[in-house]
Amino acid sequence: MPAPTIIPIRTASRSYDAVIGAELLATGASRVREAIPEARQVHIFVDSGLPPTVVTDLARRLDALGLRVTHSPVRAAEDGKTLQALYHMMQTIAGHNLSREDAVIALGGGITGDMAGFAAASYRRGIPWVNCPTTLLAMVDASVGGKTGVNLRAGTELQKNMVGAFWQPRLVLADVSTLGSLVERDFRAGLAECIKHAMLSEPFGDPHLMQWTKEQLGGILERDAGVLTELIARNVAIKAKVVGTDEREELAGAAGRALLNLGHTFGHAIETLPMVSPASDTTMAPLLHGEAVALGLVCASRCAELMKLVGDGLTDSVRRTLQHAGLPTLAYHLPGSGEILDRMRHDKKVSGGKLRLVLPCGEARCEMVSAPGDDVIHDAVDAIRP
Image (cartoon, rainbow, N blue to C red; front, side, top):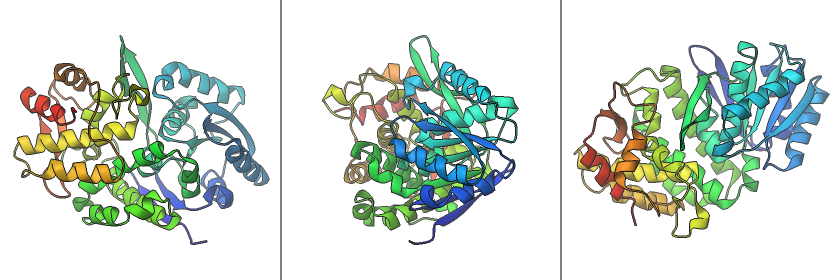
């Protein structure tokens, strides 16, 4: 078995490694133990959709290393990512009497990681945690950088990740073998974040990531472990450089963490709309996060064209890439563009009452643009209407 790839994450508050490779949950329990040397017990929050043997095997290996292990399920759904669910999670670990030296382990996708990390950040004002992502989306994006949180409901509107904390894990252990059990739609959704990273990769030392991703798409979709390890490692390396420079998303320049929101302001505005679907068949509603990001990339590209940040043709190129990856480029049953714009104005990146968007400004570069005109936003949203 090839040796795993290790990407160092260096931030102002903590340094740790992201370890990427095959069969890591079977062979990497010692890495977890080394990351939390003072812990006597751990609690694993596990995505309820994972096969039961995944958590029981990990628990058995950690137990053999001298850790007392407990675990409980997390319902990994946006409408379950709430303060009430977080309170229940903290009650659970309090019931097991975890000390400040003990640790939480997140085993699942991005929602599980966000919630378990926030519970770790909040319980006893912060205890260690380890992130073991089991989806492509979580491996390349949510697992790195210490963003944790839950959604907030304001009236009838679900506002994504509006409550949370920056709390870096002690270790990220990304076992690509777990991706074999993902359903195809969920797996492809993770590719949206990979394409997003490729669209902003030049300042972070990997300007040819998009070309490589296109060339390796066959192996990626076949879930070849070696190809997936390189894909995830190159994406994590980009995010590591971004968060190492701007841990708490405080910079607005070319190296700022806000650049990672490319496609997300549009995407978040439509992701939680219950009837919006990636196909005319409404049974596919609502959108998955990666599908919403893919649609947001189309909108952002069209917005950049309209604002003359790039030449014509970028939107068509982005559409083709997303389509080859099996991702949607049209959204069905969208409400009016005015409603979508209103939802975008609730985004966390609004500053001084002005909407800010990350938009492409070159083949693999992006920039932050403040206060684009409403007509530009409306036309950009129209780019994803059937």
